[in-house]
Amino acid sequence: MSDQEERQETNTITLPFSFDPAEFKALGKKRIKELTDAQSEFFETVQESNRQWLDRIESETNLASEFVSQLMSARSVPEVVNICREWMARHLEMAAEDGKHLIAETQKYLAAGTRVMSHGWSPGEVGAST
Image (cartoon, rainbow, N blue to C red; front, side):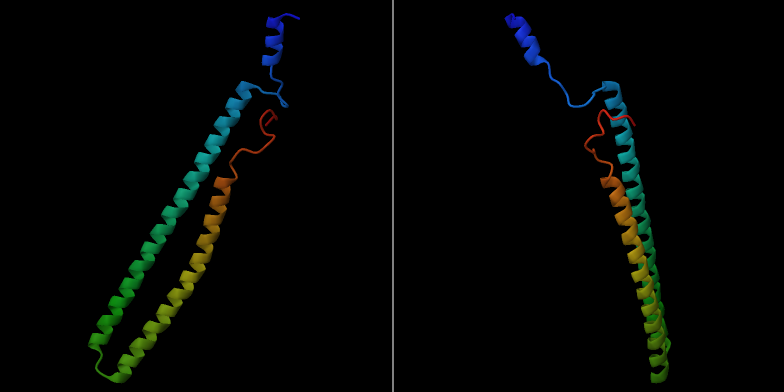
């Protein structure tokens, strides 16, 4: 065997899987699209969450403003106590709603985050027919 034949033989790499560049390119494009879609969904989830929490802050501000104006117009101690009870009841309702919303929102984040993370490369996919 000549030196040139030996060099060609040692430069040949045998892959443990079939490697089709066109298939590899298509798989890469598919994965990038899936990842982009998942990231877009996650970003939309974050934006929706921000809008909901800003609405919640606004309603809390309105409740506090209403509470202060009612206290300012109160004429007796029993009236002040009644206003405070109403405010506390509404505040506790809002806190319960916040808890439910937070749990639902956490589930959305986990689901969206899982979709983003699951779009990575898996062993054995290259060369496998999809």
